[in-house]
Image 1 (tube, rainbow over the protein chains, first blue to last red):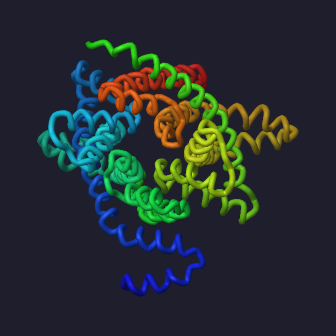
Image 2: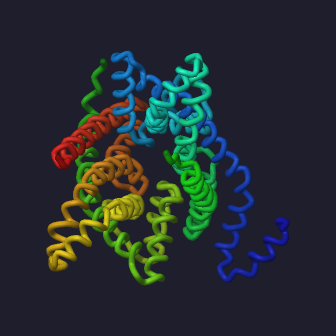
Image 3: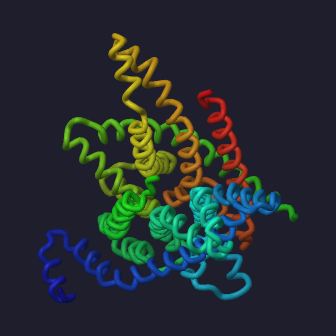
Length: 230
Length: 213
């Protein structure tokens, strides 16, 4: 359906100020959706890298390393997104010009890293010792044990949970509108502030819901499918 | 380490007091609301159950920021005007309540039906079955979950300054506007870390005390 067809449909709505706001929102939605997804992907990559490092640190046999990693997780889990994001944004801004979108990626990625680290840790520790020993007994090198036994089993357990965390990042990316990013929420806030049509919020919520709910449902299904039974 | 100038620690302290009040009040309202939602979620009436599922999935599938801003904008437009504190409690309760109701339900499902059936077979009254069998087991499942929920509410509180509540984030923004000093957010993060470690420490202690031998 083209923009003209949409407008003629919206013209049928009884509340024309809502219709105008809705048509503006829908027109600005595609780039805004791109920004939201961009923040989500960037944050997810950052959280995966940092989470993997901290998660491996927690399973380290070196007591100093594992304790340090554990404390990073304990402390990191107590940090809420709003002050973290404003600190990251203004601190980097005082040194170099930074885009709100990039600041949002960093802040959301940092905030989710401790949770990601815990996932990696539980994923690694769920691999039964017997399987690792069996692989060693068969003459696998340590590298082969990791690549052929630990990683496949751990991935199977972690994949759905990582997906759920990424959905969480998508929802949390909405706060980036506070520092001026033109993501879904940012675009909506501009429209609502200039047109006073609060009903648009329901449409905005629905936009996120239509992405988050199916993905989350699929991940729950995947979790049941991949569940280990031994 | 550097010292934060006293001209803003006073303001942040005032905001902290509001945040703590918010945390206490919304922990209670969220727990109560989650019980209501749980009752709807497991109701024998299909329509009520659907309402419960719909509410839980919708609030878990939309951003907190959008919920807070929507509640803030929508209530006055239908003629309901609340104090910022009340609006904040409402937003937190509706958001975290959806997660808590779902975790209550998971807890309820994990209770084995054997002991309850055994108690009924022994001729215990319904009240006694609940008091001596169901309640002790469910409490041990629910209490650790409550620790997580207070943590989640703590992490939710810095979002509600968006409704005009003068808690730490609002004060921080004022301080930053006046002094251009963004290190105020570092102070706020430090306060949240202390509060969070206290809460998770207390929750772990209670969980240890309640563990079955």
